[in-house]
View 1 (cartoon, helix red, strand yellow):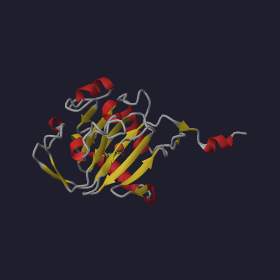
View 2 (view 1 turned 90 degrees about the vertical axis):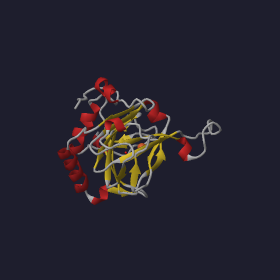
View 3 (view 1 turned 60 degrees about the horizontal axis):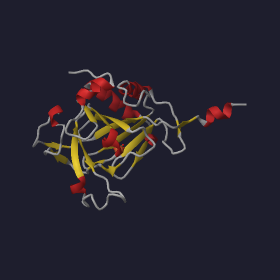
Amino acid sequence: MQTCHSVHDLESFAIDKAPRAAYYIPEYISEAEEECLLRQIYNAPKPKWTQLSGRKLQNWGGLPHARGMVQEKLPHWLQSYTEKVSSLGVFGGHCANHVLVNEYKAGQGIMPHEDGPLYYPTVTTINLGSHAILDFYLPISQENQNQVPSTEDERHILSLLLEPRSLLVIREALYTSYLHGISPQNDDTLNSTVVNLDCCSANAGDTLERDTRVSLTIRYVPKVLKTPLLLGRRR
Ligand SMILES: O=C(O)CCC(=O)C(=O)O
Ligand SMILES: [Fe+2]
């Protein structure tokens, strides 16, 4: 297995058939690390979970906000992964300070969306438990609505298979100019729109049954505020 310690090493994991830039590293963490992460996630206090319509999530590091994020210290079990991923140099020399943990049961997903301007324009995802198919779409905007097809199917440009223990990195135009989402299904048939099968253990034509998947989306929020607690201490 190739090792990956810097942006330079990362280039060898670039997915050529995707617009710039997607990187996919299979078996980025071990089975023991995967188990340990899942144990920590499910050991978190119940109120840490927020139930949304198609998934539930844990937010770590603070709530991103236009005025700045009041930063919260990451727990040690996440800190080691934010450091490991940041050492790839994907956050412009900064260390990731924010992690969303998403849990999807079979049949759940996330609507096509952009991650928005509060984050540094790179997202890194550690995949746990079960696979997902991440779909990318051309967005519709005021300016391009006449040039872009109207149905979601027609705007779909490609998909990526995310297998358990892999790392995905999305940045540049693929991050800023496309939408991404996961459709709410119980299984996925791997067709020719899945462009990273060369690097996966599953094969074209396979149908993969979904089980519970947990993703860690690790990001850097550039705008942070000093904590009110610290400000309050000044005399
Ligand atoms: O679970 C995933 O891989 C996608 C999550 C996502 O798009 C997000 O948290 O913004
Ligand atoms: Fe997203």
